[in-house]
Image (tube, rainbow, N blue to C red):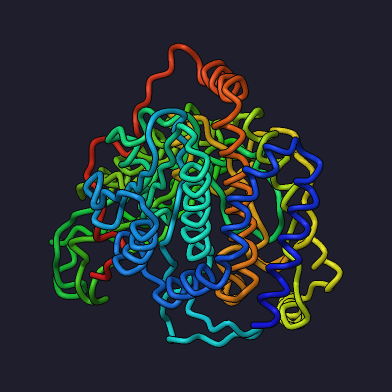
Length: 486
């Protein structure tokens, strides 16, 4: 408890000393949100660790979603749950009138990453789930930020609305896309987003657009030794298809990515498989290029089916846009991140982090990245890499994303090291920092109409007057069972 109190005092002193350089009325108003967060560290530490322990997979996050909803309800938000056909999705609202500021909250875990909060590999449940992407801190940090903004709106009597969007199944399920498709972001003026990282910075990369497709092949079963001539192997079709795709890799842009896994290859070697399935992720930094790649992969699937006398039925599982950058919002949130600062380890956390870096043979000098704030980088197109359903939000509402150091610097994404760090007080410190950045950013947007108008003008210019949103997942319903083992 002594360490927690010390952390609160140091964080409060650091932020308030920076705020002292601002106009007096602004500093006083900011103290409402910052003071609330400094006094609520134990609350959000407990909440994030509760969600960390649940570690629920996409569209199955019932307990995690309910915990976040209850915290918002207890703090005066009205909550609409089960939105856009997803039982664990919700929209929590406080305030009235404009501007309307949205905050994204995620809370799904990953399979196979169960891990204790220790600096060595120790699954809590062998083969169990774990928060390797830190969404336990993500959802809690966003809720904390939303409530801090509510405190400011309530006590200053300022006009404005804050909405916290509970977005399930980011890890492949694309919950945000369904919420965008159902119009839940209409009327929102700006969206604040973050993601746990191993450094403190504003995201300047667009990431990649992605199409996720399951290819179902259907053949004819037969005895593989007694009468194979009467069978038509769906597995042969899958393997022929995969071979063709591997050949076309040479001829695609180097920034594009194609990867797959055979999710069903048959039941027994002596039975010609009548059914087989392969799951594909196809990515590119630009949707136009992605469309051409998807068309090519579909042609390969049809060719494989023709060549093996089988039938193929592609099923779009999900699809995300690349992100649309907004420099004005990025510069604003960068200024607030620099004001709040990075994550300061206490002695216990430093010892823990030093052991973590040993696990991936890094030098402990890398730990400095947890406490520094990186300067705002130049906007750049992704050279291949991750995709996120935040992309669809960003093409419908001006959106900005930042990272804070939930993870020990240098750790790999989706790793046991991230699960261990995110479930500790390191994760709590980072999510509180994020909540502070969100609240300070929102206050500026509420109180500076010219700034918000500049954000919107840039958004419209970058998006283009002829833009028409068409979700890459089409009109399919949410794949609520995509994480259910069959």
